[in-house]
Length: 260
Image (tube, rainbow, N blue to C red; front, side, top):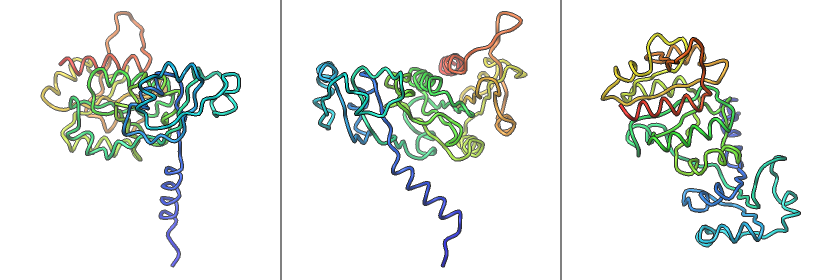
């Protein structure tokens, strides 16, 4: 009997995910990945100088490095031109943090999560992961498509947070929001035209878990995402006009939510 198309596509996606690897680069990102027992490490390429600087992290990383000539480093590792690798690159499997319910219903950290609606810039997502770790959020959640995947550039910007802060990519963001609501989360979307301030929205959610929902710069939140939010809130500005980069807006919102 011939398999249905949807079954074939699901199996193909599963095989593609299993084959996917990520090259992390830079001393900080590589050091944190080596120290992470959850990471499946495949290949470590270092210059002699980088190996000396990694020291104890290299000894406990569980993988033997390939020491290469710094002048030929780029021939051993498939990194984008301009990547500041500092003579260190580590090929790994993407992290598997588990199911959304497991992480968000009773995971480590505050009952606070961040959802990103089509935020595709890895530098923005890396910065948001860093802020989420600082303010103790349980997870950063993004759609599997049209979002920044786990990459070396994201890891470098996250400055180690990618190894410690759950980054969940889901099939459908609106469905994930509904599941969070079922867990008791209040869904607060950030939008410049929000009818209430962020402070007022968070005050109304006191005592309940909070999910902060942010959209990409320019397009903002999609219609379906807006409709699924419990409230749309704005960050007040001192002047008549103002805007924040999405990663800065996330940091402000995380601080406000964690301080409440």
